[in-house]
Length: 181
Image 1 (cartoon, rainbow, N blue to C red):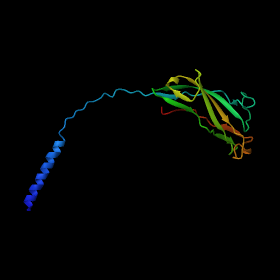
Image 2 (image 1 turned 90 degrees about the vertical axis):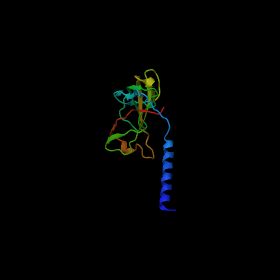
Image 3 (image 1 turned 180 degrees about the horizontal axis):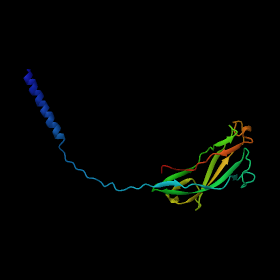
Image 4 (image 1 turned 45 degrees about the vertical axis):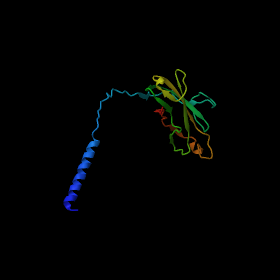
């Protein structure tokens, strides 16, 4: 086959491919815009806490309700704090939480000083629990925070280095954190 015939065959094949390609683009279509409109988000917040003046001995200790003087391993102390909840949102759920461990600034340093924290929550309407929804918007919540100084043990918790020291409990943060509903 000569070069002229090969060129004619290639040109014919290219023409067929072009016509076939144009045929696949021949379809009807249309589109329309949908008005996006406005969407407003909800809110989740805690007011600043208002707390009792000091720590008291918790239920289960001698002197329950008495102001804390000099703690010893095995003591549990408590404090009540109140705050307002802002919770708006159609499907909002959130949990009130505090850290399980508390930290201290001590003088002199006391490496084995250890304490754990927990809290219970009650609204003015008597609802008890840590889960908040938009139904709690505007509620005043009372958090009863307990700090436990475990009795010393072989794991070197609250041993002799904790005697006669001045310790300041660092701030305990109550958080309101959204959960997936």
